[in-house]
Image 1 (cartoon, rainbow, N blue to C red):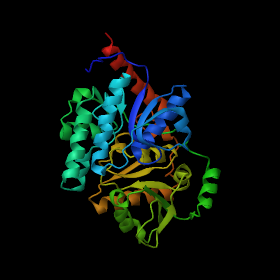
Image 2 (spheres, rainbow, N blue to C red; image 1 turned 45 degrees about the vertical axis):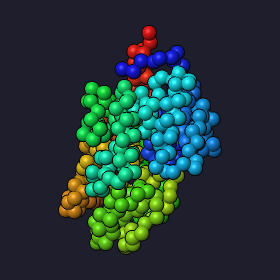
Image 3 (cartoon, rainbow, N blue to C red; image 1 turned 30 degrees about the vertical axis):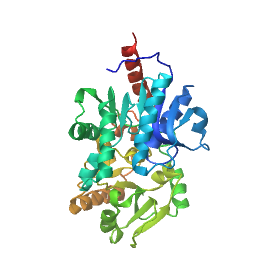
Image 4 (cartoon, rainbow, N blue to C red; image 1 turned 45 degrees about the horizontal axis):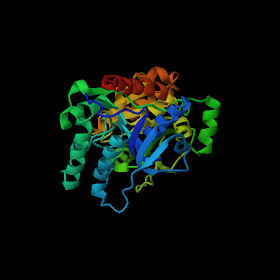
Length: 366
């Protein structure tokens, strides 16, 4: 257990690439900041980039680490070095690291780079080796590693040799005030607003990385089907065309899209967790999900129709099951929260995280 060599400050310190809307780990930080703001707690956030237009920017003490002008391959290492210096200067303990840094006392694991390379079949280049080395130090230098899924816990042991005793599985939070079901009448209004047909089973793919999310598999299974189905894509523009395929564009109202469609589908080849799955279920919409994704650990019962991403017949069977339930009027979820194995609220997650902060502070006191 690391011991403080200086007076500790009571600041709650997070480190991340940015405080902004971007990838999943940035979204996670914003959720934490929102939950802390509800408790009138103002954290310190150390990051490379801040979106000053966000309300969350006014709720934190922002510390910017400039990396402009540095080669891309060196930015993470420079950030880590500067954070180590800032930690020593200010007496921050514990530092909660969401990105890869040697300053982390509580390291958040939302993904692993070697795991991603292994699943996608890529051979590591020199940049990959640099990334993996810093990630290794991030996880092995921390007193506690918070893994966002059992899948990530296994990858931490396999690829980084992290002892199981230092790993805590804590599934990521979702804004339950935003993601919840609506009445059948409201759902119909949303469906018509999006121009979705009422006589077809509408599947949703929410994606900004179509190759990883398996768009090609879904177009094969649904795009030219003679069944009454439609695949809609929210996110990045699609570079495919098919009679049963439609692009909805980038959506800031994704919760209403979940409510308007009949089923969400995730055919990800690599998905450390996959908040889309939990968000969809919370809105009352079941998930067709590829086995091996982290979120399948927490979705149960009629909310989940699993399939094997390497087996086209398995996906076809899951779609056929969804069609059967849809025709019988049994596809929508009556009790979404009962379909999850954990409390997805941000406050429950924050309680667990702050518990580890207190444990480390108490252990470091003289």
